[in-house]
Length: 242
Ligand SMILES: C[S@@+](CC[C@H](N)C(=O)[O-])C[C@H]1O[C@@H](n2cnc3c(N)ncnc32)[C@H](O)[C@@H]1O
Image 1 (cartoon, rainbow, N blue to C red):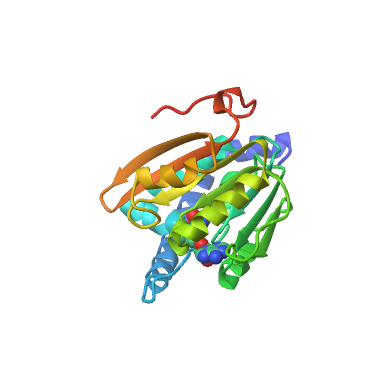
Image 2: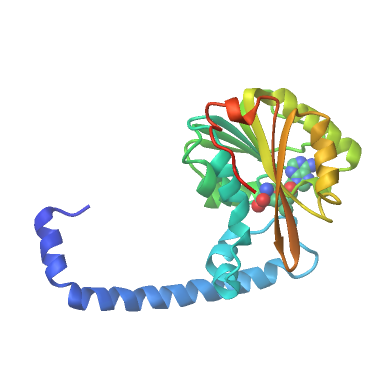
């Protein structure tokens, strides 16, 4: 960013510049924490929200609770994304994961959600050149394109068993030959348990793996499903261990 000489002068003066910047950083951190604490409080007043602003997790709940669960979905799906691939993020919520976990590896992303507020927030806070946000009710509509990765996190609670089967069939048809469907379901919320999630996936995909994480108030089911063997897939060339 700065020329060599300027960097040298700044380096020689870091003994007073750094404490000044640390003071400014501390004050803005506290302000940021407090603003997101208030935002989180308002968001969770009844009725319960269908999506949340993940910047509250980043700036408030993570620091307060030290619980890293909220990043698991993003990290997990990111590992499975084809480099320079085409990604579909179903029910993307505020688009935080779309931007901050998927957009670096993917060439292009289509991210859809039924909620006008979620898509407006995604556009205002998490826009990028390679992401297209679109309002879409997945019970009535589905993108007419093919994708390398389809991601779906914490959405099944909004669908009946019949609707889940219809959705999974559309997902299967929208995947490229080596395509991967991945995501998260919360046990006892999105589906009963691992067995039930497996039974839905088994109808449409030959290769399925489900990983579980347990927290005091949540049991997560992370799934990978494909009709192409994971081990032969040239972008999924490693196997996650349990
Ligand atoms: C718990 S949030 C998950 C958001 C995001 N996937 C994440 O993990 O942060 C569930 C999302 O599903 C969306 N949704 C519910 N029903 C839907 C439907 N029929 N079509 C599209 N999106 C839907 C909601 O608007 C909400 O943003």
